[in-house]
Length: 239
Image: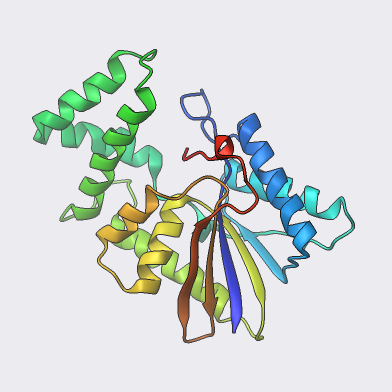
């Protein structure tokens, strides 16, 4: 059996001009993961990451901390399939569409946009995005220019197959990706309803570890959303 570890990217920069950059706290989370793995001598045969800056920066900080103590860190391979679902498309294309159909959502969206200093802004954004992703996942047809939910599901499965079908047994593989990809991977492993991918997605913490054991024909969840490297709950974040 081989082991696959999915790492969600560290905290990015929510509400900043560019979300796709690690925050200082996110950099700390990634560094602590690298130090933890180095202490545990958790060596990997292969490392892959998604194309987003927050995913690539996470693997860079982890790898740097790992190699600083003299341990070997494989050269990360960027796989486009490890990307998150289409955040920009969902926000900019689906939000206006849903607001026209659903008055309650329109009011929720207006409340979120109205006051940038609201201390509950992150929670308001969460509520908006939960409604949007559910709309995205259950829409009977895709929207022009936005990756549909079935296409996203197929992309995640294709990425996992690409890794699992490589030759060799007893491999240790790390994938640095995002919460949506991890939620869908758990859904595929459990063969659960599509909506479970979204429910899992909202629980995935930044820089958390979700592990699977696999062969070419088997893909089994072993642990979910673990943070053994972040002992202080003040370091636990979701965005």
